[in-house]
Length: 259
Ligand code: OOG
Image 1 (cartoon, helix red, strand yellow):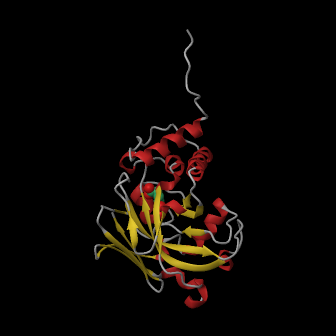
Image 2 (tube, helix red, strand yellow):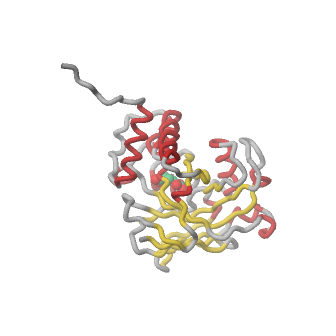
Image 3 (tube, rainbow, N blue to C red):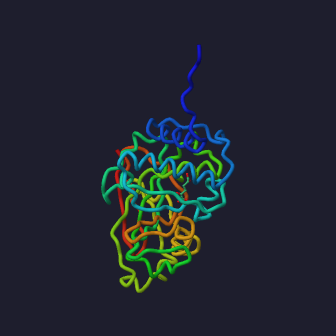
């Protein structure tokens, strides 16, 4: 009698499938157990993971950067820029409700978002491509147990992306140019209490550098793409029933409530 085994698939697809199932079932994988050591392979897993989401009808909306601030690098014990993909399924309206019950161990971070008005090629002028900037909230949810992972593992896991909300857009001319973004105060509040404070300067010294990095690492980026520049502060745990607000000086505030 012969035995049949399910087609194994290539290793990238196998890990992508496991990460996808972990997210869908809110059941974390053990971190450090994937055997993944190569960054290029890790991005191949991320790609396979995103392809699975797109096959379910999700639409790409943008790109996110991770570990653009020292606060985040220190918090997570890693020291390299990473990038992930955003989809419409992750979008939460400003002031809207974000369901966290189906997540594993959500955390929230205050960010700056860019909206591209023109395409941006690797090495292109990021400021010239920006149509607008906004305060943003990113909800991250590692699919690894205890938020413990290696750099390739977090890349494979689409850089922990789970949800995001973008506040009101401001055109660069209304700020007197994007130079103003270099040092704006940032406050993250949970239920009206400040949880983290910082500055946009924490994002690679200037958030425009994160946009240049996004183009270099994930470009070319099309007009209409949203780019999350990375957290300005450490991330904080996000329980259900919480009102979260991020305020960026001169850009205003963005909020969501968790369900
Ligand atoms: C990875 C995501 C990091 C940021 O803004 O630095 C990130 C993680 O901390 O799980 O999104």
